[in-house]
Image 1 (spheres, rainbow, N blue to C red):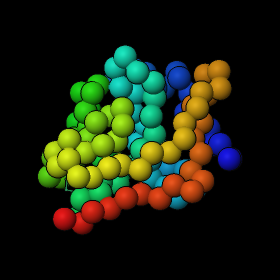
Image 2: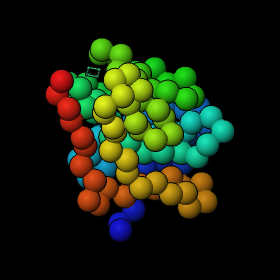
Image 3: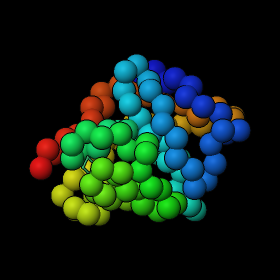
Image 4: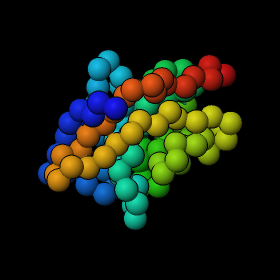
Length: 111
Ligand code: FES
């Protein structure tokens, strides 16, 4: 699995959301409160708006377009509940935040 540095912990904190692009994959990094950083698809499964402009309250992520809401720890849909964000593998190496995109494709529901 090939990891690529996407940012540093100097730029990314607990409760934070940032967007990055890795090998053409639009990705959001979220750091849920009391948890560890996660990397999910940055394109909404509903109608492909970018999630980076949405609201992140430390627990849930809300798409700016039509307010679909996702659990920031799992990527699972909360409203509606029958959707899921694809998750990329993220690891920390010192202060470096690394993401691998191998084998992960965004999910879309188009409903
Ligand atoms: S595009 Fe995200 S809720 Fe519609």
